[in-house]
Length: 236
Image 1 (cartoon, rainbow, N blue to C red):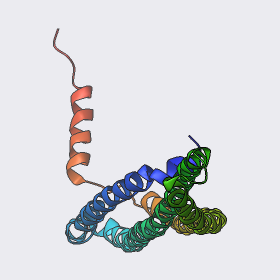
Image 2 (cartoon, rainbow, N blue to C red):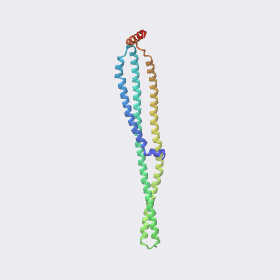
Image 3 (tube, helix red, strand yellow):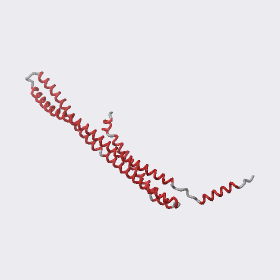
Image 4 (cartoon, rainbow, N blue to C red):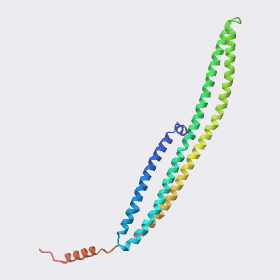
């Protein structure tokens, strides 16, 4: 089966649509969790930190706002891709309807051809009986009627055949142009957001490296106590 014939049955469209819908739901949950963890929760966490790192953590929190914007952009692009994929279905339905109509015209043509062939056989049999046969005139009229209908159905079929070839060709071009354009737009958005997120990540990393090691007095006391213990002689 060719790629185009596989696409005509459209299992790929149904699968792509379902997978995108699931991805959008998961992306929405991810965005909700990210907001919950980086807005009120993180702000409250920063407030409780030592003063010497408080300012740096607030700057990191500001970067999370930019990450949120990128996530929202990704979510919008994903929804746009889903909408674009959904618009492919009417395009497919339209060509299916045209192909069904062509098949109906083809069926009429084949039926007329069969009727005409049988009428011709009956006419030949009637002629074999002689010109005085009562069936001859009836057979001639039936053959003439069948021939006229065959001519009409043949013309309709030939017109439909040449037309459907063009329509299928245009359909394939239109369908794949729409699909490729949608994927291209989505990929471009993802690439741009990825670049932005990389830059934000580097900035957060630099801010993180600037966080000083706080001098916890309890740690200092424990270190002093440890040194004292090490200096004490061990009883034998």
